[in-house]
Structure formats: structure tokens, C-alpha cells
Image (cartoon, rainbow over all chains, first blue to last red; front, side, top):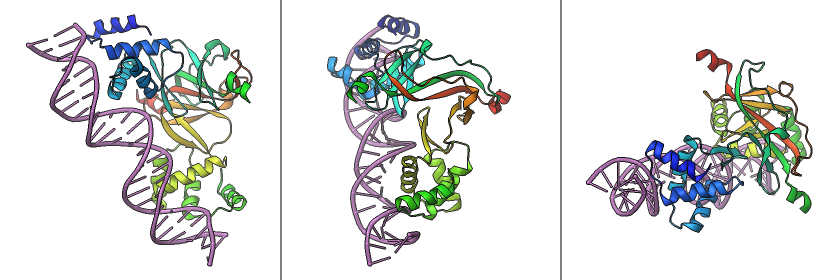
Length: 138
Length: 138
DNA sequence: TTGATTGCAAACGGTTTGCATGGGA
DNA sequence: TCCCATGCAAACCGTTTGCAATCAA
């Protein structure tokens, strides 16, 4: 997701580009870390100190509904991911850090029908273990 | 997990077997559905109408710490799974139903080191789509 | 100008905690 | 008897909502 996409979205849906929205979008686009709403709030307020929690939540759900970011629940925590390409997630069981894992690093699972007649249209793999930094620290 | 395991746990850790704990364990052992704490509370209270929310949460964390049940967050909802064997989960995007998927139904992912030097010790696959019942109802 | 967006604060829902009572071992 | 376990209610935490004030278009 990029700030230009925000402009396009604003034009398409007659939305306003406020400083708050711009700051949130820029922050999300700048990090590969998967921030929680609270982290987004404090990151944004470091630059533009008058954004409220409600605005952060509003903007996040707007971006999510427009498909510019993805919502991901990892270990019971709500996070937002601006990497829209297919990838998996790695969660460090020591420090809680979340990292993206290249799609090709994991054998693909064929989307389709399961033995129980369910139709699978998407799936996600969450890997758990120790991140490189925590391994060194062991 | 079985009621006998509860007895063994009680003896090993000097814990008491109360009617509430017994009811919770029996309910968990009886269902393949992945109940939330609230569902467990009302199921248990249908039989033994004086179990409090706090007792349900206490007992669940006790069982979890003893390894008799597994905690699983699916779509932001806390659920408990008494199926301890390796398996995956399917979440129906229409009705929210959660089903176990046989481990062998999905190609295994080799646990080990990733390109980014993370060490993976476990992983979970969450499949999303339509369950058999919702497919028919479409 | 005007309606979308904002900040604030209250409400909310699920989970946790503190504490006095009660009941297994 | 002695604590462990319980019920209750309050506290807590992240998320949502209602509303009057504000500001981008």
C-alpha cells in the first residue's frame, strides 16, 4: 500500500485526505513490522500528536475494507499488514516478533475441496519458533 | 483428554476434583466442536447450574498448562480444543463453524530452519472457505 | 457551505483479579 | 482441619459507539 493509493481511494470514494489518514497510511507503508492499533496510534502521534484512538480504528477499517491493508490475528493480537502479496507469518515464541515468510519457502497447499466436502478458498500458515535474534540470545 | 486424565492430574498435582472441574472436562471431551469459554460455561451450566465464569477460566488455564487441552485463536476468537493430535483447522467464512482437518489431508511442512535463520518448532494451518452445510445452502 | 471526519468520553464484551465463603482431601 | 477452589463483583484492556465540534472539499 502506498500514499498514492490513498489518493486514488479518496478520489474514487469521495473521501477526504486528512493529515491523520495520511500519517497512518505513511506509517503502515513504512514498516514491515505488523503493528497493532496501539502501536500505530503512538507511532503516528510521535509525528502528528493529535490523532485519537477512534480515528486510528476508523482509518484502519476503511483501509481494510478498501483492500489496501490486511488484518491478521496472531496469537490473539490484532495486527495490520500492508504486505498484500501472498506470504506466511512467523511468530517468535520468545519476543513475540512477527516476520513475513516468503510464500515459496513453504510448500504450497492446493486450494480446492477437502475430504469433508469443505471448499477452501484461502489459507494461512503461522509458523512458530525462535527468531534469529532470540536464537543468538539463547 | 479424558476424565481419567483429570484424576491423574489431580493426584499428581494435589488438586481437587470438584463437580465443576469434572463437568468442564467431560464437556470438552465430549465435543469435537471447538468451544469458546462462553459456550463451555453455558453447556456446563445446563447440567450443573452453578459454575461461574471465573471457574471456567481458571479450569481452562489449568488444563491448558497441564497440556490436556490446547488453546486456539481463530479469527480473533479464543477457543479450546481437546484434540491433542496433530491436525489443522477449517473455519467456515459464512457460519463460523470450526472443523478439524486430518493432518494427512495437507502436505506436511518440514519443521526446521528457514532462510531467515528462524527455527520453526511448530506451525498451524488455518483453512478458510465454506463448510459442507453452507455449500448446500448457497 | 456542508457533510465527512475528528476528538472525547462513555459503552461494550471478553478476560482477569481480589476477596470472603465454602467444600474436597 | 486446612487450604484449594469457588462465586461474585469489580477491574481491566482492547475495540466500538454517540455526539458535538471541526475542517477538507
